[in-house]
Every structure is written in C-alpha cells, then in structure tokens.
Amino acid sequence: DPRRVVAWLAGAVQGTVCLQDTDGRVLAGTGIPLDAGLVADVVAGRISAAAVQDGDRHLRLVAVRASDPRPAAAGLLAVARDTPFDRRAAEIVTHTAGVVELLLRERELRAAGHRLRRAAADLRLAILQLLMVEDTVSARRVASGLWPGLLDTDSACVYIVEGDPAERDGLAEDCLDRTRGQALVVRCPAMDGHVIVLSPAPATAERLRSLVDGRPGTFLGGSVRQNLAQTATAYGQAVSALAVAHFRPDQAAVYAERTHPERLMDPVALHAWSTAVLRPLDTLPHHTRAELLATTRLGLEFTAVSAAKVLGVSRNTVRARMDRVEALLGADFSDLTVRATAHLALNTHAALTEDLAGTVPEPSGVRLDGLLASPALRAWAQDLLDRLVRDGRDLRGTLRAWIAADGNAERAAHDLGMHAQTVREHVRGAEPVLERQLLAAGTDLYEVVLAHLALGDLTAPVLLPANQGQPDSPVHG
Image 1 (cartoon, rainbow, N blue to C red):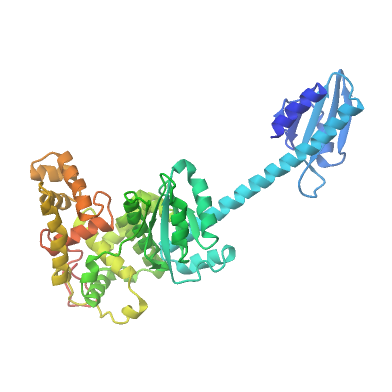
Image 2: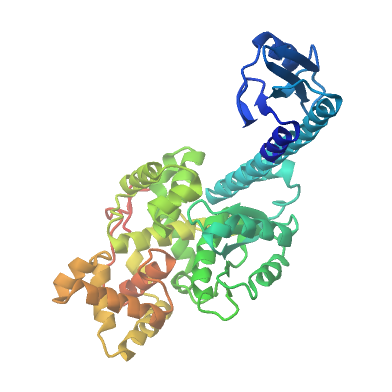
C-alpha cells in the first residue's frame, strides 16, 4: 500500500511527505504547497528530481516513473522538512520513490487485469444473451476470437451453480478453473447467487458436481443436451433441476426427462398447429420475428424482470415485445390457459428441426382441442391429477379454481368461499404431490394447465378467430 510507505517515509526523514498524481491530486500523505513550474518540469520529465529551499522549508521532489517508456512521470513524491537533507535522508527519499513506483505499477497492472476480467465477463454475458434469442451465428462470431472452438458444436448443456451471493465471484472463478476453458461461465444477471455454465463438453457435469460436493449451501442444476438455438429452453430446464437439487443429499440434479404432454400429441399435427398459431409473425423481418419469439418464450417462462436481465434489455422492452406478440396473435397473456397454450406453440416451434420442417403440412384445420383429445394425453393427465385425490384436502378443486382465476389466490378464494391463504397453502401442497413448481410461472405450471384442458376441467382458449378456409386467414387456437 503506497500510503503505508509514504507514512513510513515521513517518520524516517522526520518531515511531511506527499504523493500526488500528474494532475496534482494527493494519492497519499499530506498536501504540500509546491511551485507549479518546478512540479511541471519534474512531471514532464525535463528533470528527474529537484532539491530546493523555500524559506524555512527544505524540499525534495522526485518523479515517480510510469510503467511505459514515456518520458513523462506517473506522479510526484514530495518531501518537506525543517532541516536540510543529509546524504542518508536524500537516499532514503530516492529509494522510496522507486518502491512507490513499483507499487503504483502493480496497482495499475491489477486494475488492468480487473478491467480485462470484467470485459471478458461482459463478453461471455453478451454471448449467452445472443444464444438466448437464438442468434447462434453472432454468438459464434463473438466467441471465436477469445474462446476458439467453444461453440463449434450444434448442442450443449446448461448448468446453474447456486451459492452465497456474497461469494459469487469466487464461485465463478472456481467454475472457470473446473471447466478448463471448455465452458461459457456467466454471472447470472437475474439472480445474484447464480452462475450459469454452458458447455458442450460431457466432462463438465462431473467437474461441476465435484465443485458442489461437500460444499454447504452450494447447489447444481443441469439441463439435458439441447441445440444451441434452444439455450433458453436449456436454461429453463437447469432452473427446474436446481429447485430439485435443494432436496437432494448430493446437492445436484439434472433435469428429468419425464413424460411431457407435447410428446403425447401427434407431432405432425402439433407442428402444423403451432405454425398456424404463429403465422401472423411471418410477415415480420426474420431478426425481428426471432427476437419477439425468443423474448416471449422467456417472458412466459420467467417474470418480465428476470427475462429482461437475462436478455440485457429493460423490462419495458420485454413487455413491449410481448404486447406486440399478444396483438399479432390476438391473445391475452393475462389468461393462464392462453399463456400455457402460447408456451406450447412457442416451444414446439423452437424444437422444429430442419428435417421435420419439411414434413409439416401447410396450416390446416388442426385445432387445440383436437390435439388435446389424444387418448395417451388424456391418460397422462388423468394419472397426474389423480395424485391430488389422495390428499384429504380438495387440492384438485382448489388448483382448478386457482388456474381459472389466472393464478390469483384472492379471486379463487372468493369463488371457493375460503380464505386466500388457504388457497395458497393448497397450491403449495400440490407442488410436491405433482412434483412440479406451480407458484412460479413456467413449464411445470403450464403442463398442469394442459392436463386440466385435456380432461375438460378448463375450457380450451381461442388464440385466433376460427377461419381456416383461406391461407391468409387467422386460425382457431
């Protein structure tokens, strides 16, 4: 610390010491009135040191050199005392100036290293945000210069490591060390305690597991392998797995490949339906369409605030984009059944591969209620919701009313004639039974909504007016 060295020097020479930068700002010690012309000569490099007597004061001015070869100094060390400088005192001042020079140079290097690490962290976040909006081309272009080969892959897994927010910087560095340059490590912009790790390397999972193993308060959630364009989906899976990890003795969990309702629907009909639902966006420029779709997917999966932080935009921007999609689809995202239906269409579209795209027919008369009529889907929905019957409380009835009230406990309580807190307790009690998060919007909740729709417990929403006779006409949702 230059301040400690300056304080030591003042005691050693029995004088007043000041270390200042080239603009005259005091960096350490006590300010000393100095001749501006003399200071300018020393700082500019015209002289390296000066010894003068100013009335009763004896002054020594020594240039503190910069780390680069410029003749100008980085600062000035000034010493004033009442008695003349003998040889020993003069040598102490000169040698101390050299020590201060080294300390300032180390400080500059440390600051430059911090700026470099910060810039690298910002670039990693920018790459993740590009992947979140499915702009894999730009993401690869940005990554190629700094992390060659990192994104030279079609698929990857996303992991979230959660720890104490106060120790996140150290946790992120540990993740970088464990992944050995084979992962994109990002401090989550939405959650203070989260570190996001995207990696195509199979060994990453075990390396991160070893990081959280035996580390109290640290948890790991991972996705299944996903196409890079589906990074947002993988992120959602990692969030879901992280919630499970909190209840695991090893503090880690990977997203379970459980039966999802969309897999029980006719895939060709499902993709034809999703294409029809999203057709109003086809008139937009490609990048605008992709931006709106990706933002809406995240906005439906998380809160607008969290989606905004992940994407690096304002929450007003997220809401404006979602409002635009609402208007184009003729949808009302305040309706929970509409949100679940739009979520199904968006994720079906995101999962559409080039091979499958060639087999999807032109939008036709496929309707949501037709997709939901699949015997396999109805059997799955019945099995899922029947779990709630085993509880002595009417969890199924409360959950149905809560969904019908768009997740508003007060409205559901009014309809059921019970207290709002009881509704919340019932919904919270249904979560472990269904093995799904319900109070946090996202895939888990939307699957439960689709189960109610499949069984006819709720009315299937209409995203667009029914008119399937003309190619350009809106279709039934």
